[in-house]
Length: 500
Image (spheres, rainbow, N blue to C red):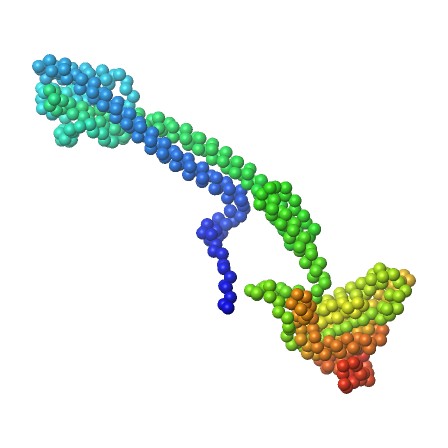
């Protein structure tokens, strides 16, 4: 069955964008969650205010323009209402004067934003001549000729019209305005055009004032929003920083670290899981002391594979060096002392030997009562095992001298060394296994240890053949018969390292 490829989580787009720019990445990291929260709140408020302001401005502008349209229609209606009066007047000149009085009175009524009002005569019924001003808010223009371009434009005015225009003052300043035009009828016949012009500023001034208030309100709201988001995010960041400091302490080896964050949310759950994690780490650290380094290495290697839960029985053929060290006189000592005292003495001697074996890159395979089984691998495994054994003998002699001075009980050890091919791997059952070595080389090392006297190191000929024999002071002993071997085994007693 084909194994399922592990899924790789895709990086978020925003993360990828920020990750491309080192300055932006440093800024985000420096500000942390507070910066992100502040930025999100800022832009959220900004977008909300922009949308609502745009809607409000649009609707308000439309409403004000519509109101001004009605105002202009009303003004035009007031001008048109002079028709009955004009009907009774026969002379166009007097009709023009009547219209001028109406327009002048309207202009002087201080209507806000009224730029000018005018009545154009198209066929000469309102003034003496067609194409002239029948009335204008600037009375000096009455009776004057209408500009040709304007005259052409007003020829097509058939109903109420509105247009946005730009008027240029004498100073050169451009003034946006709205121009309104509608027909002026006489005896139900269009004879002229009424024109009213309002400045855009006067029409939309309420909207612009409101816009200023909205900007002030927006600024205050954004400042308050950023402040509140900073306060809220600060409450989130504080426990996270506390957890981070705790992680740093754990990383530095302080597994007694405990983080208590009393919150009924995900952060509180995280602190609980953090404490559970440190408790499990402590348990695993303690458990590591009960297994060999090779077992730990095997587990680490296995954890890198996809089938992390599968640990098959079996091993690989390897050539290794085995060291067995056994405490002499342990049984007799156990009979004369309390169990607690025996354990204390035994632990002191075993710990001393274990430290020396680790110093020489050996691996403690197991402790069997008062005996140590250690394994050495690598190119110089034979020499490291010999040096470790000699150092153990010297260290125990020094320890015994110290204990003798205090009047404490002393013990000695005998060491057996052998080298050979074994199967090294996982042995036992699927539910309970041990990472160890099986083979005749292991058994022979144990037999040599049993035959060694107090303070003696017995090494097989196979091991000495691989070691730098000239460096050691050794004595070749008579071959010995050991259980499981048909022929006697050649052995050496290792005394020390030659001077120089």
